[in-house]
Length: 416
Image: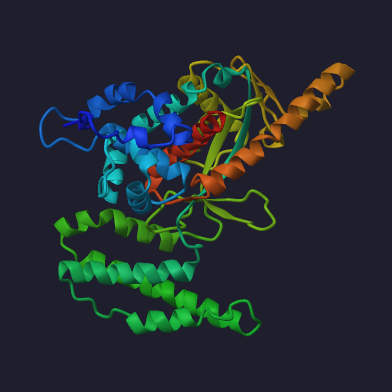
């Protein structure tokens, strides 16, 4: 059942919670701008008509936005909410509360409840708050990497994890393994030290081969000894283990993480970070005002030009108007027009039959394109896009939209 905010009657002799706050505070002003009633009505179909009332929709939406705005975790946003009266006022509280509004895990359940569709509604709302500024005809388009919260993938690390997981599965279901290799795995991992030295590389490679052999041996032993019913429960995990152990160095669609098998490797040509492991996201911002009107995750590592059609449809859906011009970098070379949208990139300057004015106009657009780079930088440093802690592909999709929503809210706060 959907929860509703408490509406306490004001006392005659005492000033209310609202009157004790500073009306010039940005969050105080933001409270009147967000259409809370409209959001509650749109989210009502995510709740059943019976059962215990859930936490108020306004509270949960405000906690999600505050988490991204101030770059804190689920646990931390709940703790800080108690200490900050302006956060409480934004959440719709009529009195100062001394206890936490909910458990940190309630935010996980709320994200799962509303899903991708609900997060997109929040994103749309943050775009509408900017009015006509968000409806500019020209937009800037670029892609970046949203790194997943995984360790740097190496074969020995993953093999040791497979060994540990196989031992745990056997212990949980009561299967006795011939050997657990607990001490052996530790000794072989220690042999990885000095891999980059002249004498240590052969020792490390030999230890890696041994670890792979042990991991494969345990996976096959589990498959033999598990009953049919139990095997179905662990079928997904075992298939990931087998797929990792069978993959070759030159294979495509490799597994880089056992608990996040959808992660892929992206090389953006950065000197300080040769490879990044996560997913590619497209960011679309208006040319003049810098409002983000498109934030989309891609499940596959596509060539930038192949993402344009999908991204432009996403922009049309969330803001209700298709852009006339998309300004991109040379990563989108080869694409001139997608539907009714013209694509401007450095390739356009190579045309021979261009007047001086046309060249000057294109150069001006390309110079303005660089404005999306600091937007991406701020999303990563201040709005939780640099490392995604949410699980699975669904976590990738909603994290980029929440980061973009927080950016748009911050733009609005700066104008208030």
